[in-house]
Length: 179
Ligand SMILES: NC(=O)c1ccc[n+]([C@@H]2O[C@H](COP(=O)([O-])OP(=O)(O)OC[C@H]3O[C@@H](n4cnc5c(N)ncnc54)[C@H](OP(=O)(O)O)[C@@H]3O)[C@@H](O)[C@H]2O)c1
Image (cartoon, rainbow, N blue to C red; front, top):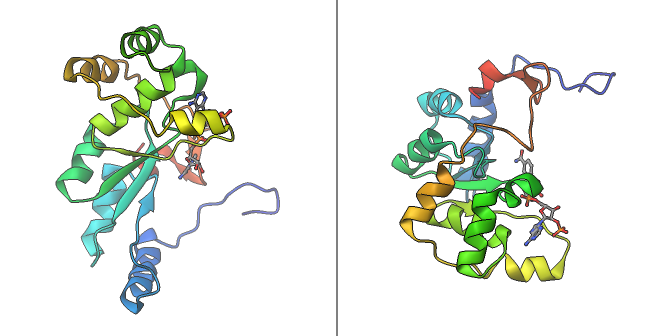
């Protein structure tokens, strides 16, 4: 972090950070090690030198950013995927298709969206300060395959949580991140 509060790119490669995490794992201090915000591009770079395949990759995922290639890439390599910002916030909850399906399954929009993630084999970490919402979020319907496909078709490759500013995010360019 620079004195201006802006994250700066360092020339320290994340492969070295990963090697340090591998040592922690080997020492028994960490039972599992994983990554966040990795793309196919950065995972390929990591896996070139990694001794341990990441247990999990936590990335932004919701019906407007379905990241199909990344989810499949991870599945093929035994990397579980966890969705952050899984609800897609109000803008996705209020999408007409999501509302239609909430009526069909007699649940809320959030429950439809979270059920869609589970149908794709993706874990979710919804954030909620509301006890009623928390209860909702662990009682999910099973969606029909056709409805899963219809929700996936809402994809816009649109980031709603970590939106790059001037092509930058977390001190990196979107090209470096493979976003
Ligand atoms: N690795 C990363 O770079 C990264 C980036 C962003 C977030 N995350 C993590 O991902 C987790 C979730 O992310 P997030 O909080 O941004 O996204 P989110 O879980 O999709 O959205 C949280 C919002 O959804 C509302 N909500 C949750 N359940 C609801 C329900 N059943 N009905 C209506 N509204 C509902 C919450 O309001 P109420 O509190 O009122 O329920 C809150 O405003 C957090 O643990 C966060 O730390 C990780």
